[in-house]
Image (cartoon, rainbow, N blue to C red; front, side, top):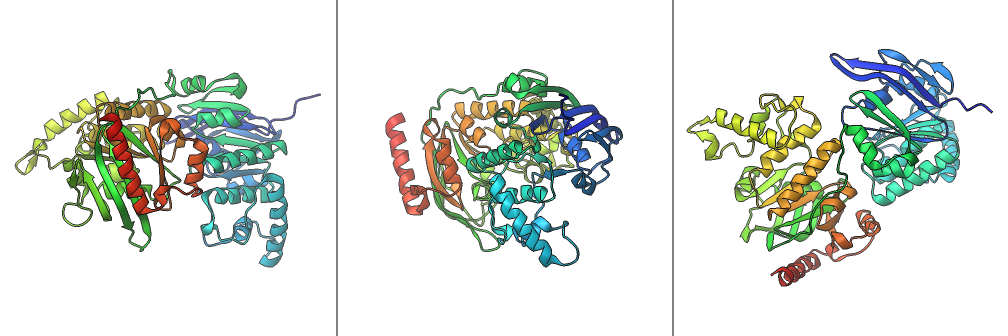
Length: 533
């Protein structure tokens, strides 16, 4: 009996953008009825390769074979006709359309919508039952959870009779429970003979769900292996080209007194929506307090308020001194002068000025410090020399202070921001999404710097949507949902399932009531003082 033809076969695919070669002579075979993972560092060429397969880009050279037939895929419509569907990391849904309207959009049967909607309703019902993709067809997309929106994207592809599904970082914005449900869906699709290509940077997911994994590095395909015959350590080394420590090596925390005390913090945005709803907690010197939660539940606003970029009510004290929450003295520069460093969630729009050089970016937020000023002039030579030292110590590549921030990779941009904030030796460091979009090698380095700062007795508030990162770095873990702090747990005793439920708003805790939360924070402070002295 002959082996079946590959569902997808790419032969000699190359693609350049000006002088940058994104893909170099790539060949890939994906067998039908399997889940095939593709991993690689930032800029390895994964997204470019999949964009060629889905018709967004045309390859400079090379051939594409679908189910044993050579195909030309000039656009996404040709890809859909070839049986390929793609679920993007950022969903392509019309928010004020219903599920049903989104599913048929672009795939209507003729000019009359009513027959198309009736047909789609029946098809969706059978697809939902077959693949555990239940979702209300009449619900507007804007009212769905992120996990249910992702189901709509998968339903769109299946409605168009896709046999091959490409998923780009599908769990980046899901709760653990939603991610588990997604994996059950993928299992069901595989069992029905569908072929799935999974692009992810999470090695745990690769090991859990894929049959085969291909590794890309610097635009080339470096290896394709059976998942059962490899390990996360081997895959990381193939991605980076050296051994990578995948776990965070840290001693138990030695927390001291409360460096930051937050009580009944409330923030209303410019649209009149209350984004922080009575948040209370203590952050101790010598600990990492991780804040988990699905993006959009108040974590960003918490960092903005504590960093001095947004007004609020309530109280915040730093080492016993009250900080202004509005008006004069409530700004990022004042917070830094008081001893609060801030690594913002979006390094490109909030942490750096992209056209400016690395040495200029190395002092932003501290540029009015007398050490960098001589009268009305800046001490540019001293700043440039200091920046060169920071870049060497933080392994920024290339180590060129004169290079514009926009010309560094994401991981190296993050290192520039981290070096600026950490080397000022703040009492409290606010860190938002420290490794978002960062290479696995840079992740290892960034985690080491966070632990080193904690061990030096600094207080660190860490916000991350990556639950693995929260568990790896945190000494205590808080969960935010709908602007509330649902509860705080010791990391050593935290249960991932319970945290996942809290992230989804399931489960009552003292953090639901602002006054109870304040009282809980006081009890926690008293307990720690009694324990640690």
